[in-house]
Length: 223
Ligand code: FES
Image (cartoon, rainbow, N blue to C red; front, side, top):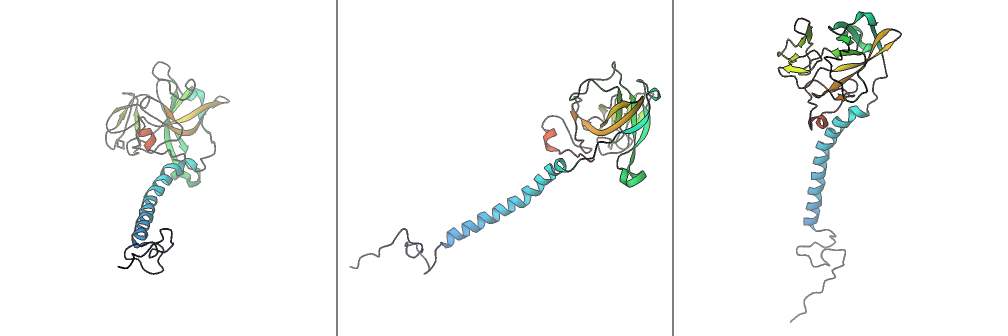
């Protein structure tokens, strides 16, 4: 009886290693080749899904943010701590009137205002955005009830912009304020969660900011 053929386990050819169905000159088995191809295709599919999502989440934070810009909204004696004064500021100066918005400004009211977390003492003026935190409709301040009301889906906010009813998911955004030579100036927008913790990179309407939600929505520095 003939001796069984001897195979060299270290041979670079599949045939030399005694692999069943091997072709002459083949160095990688078809099974290994298919496995490698499937893994490569899987890796490409994951990258095609994950990279755009990562870019969406981190991109805005890496964008160059707006330069510091303060806008004059009037002398200090224009404002008191019992009601808001509507003022028009420019959010996107490059597009003229289309980039303007109305904001509401008043003096800080130590009796009614909770301290905003994430800054020192509250600044002497409060500037509130009119962009509803539900879907962005313009809210209106009603002095008789001391509430902000959204005409679109019935969102209601209290005197400090906190949610009191309807679908909005967080308080109204605010703007940084300061006083310069007796005049009130308004800076960039920031967002707040329901505990009045400040998020310096503002979020889009409908983005929750409580609990784990704060990590799921990227900031929009230029919003
Ligand atoms: S947009 Fe204001 S409640 Fe829906």
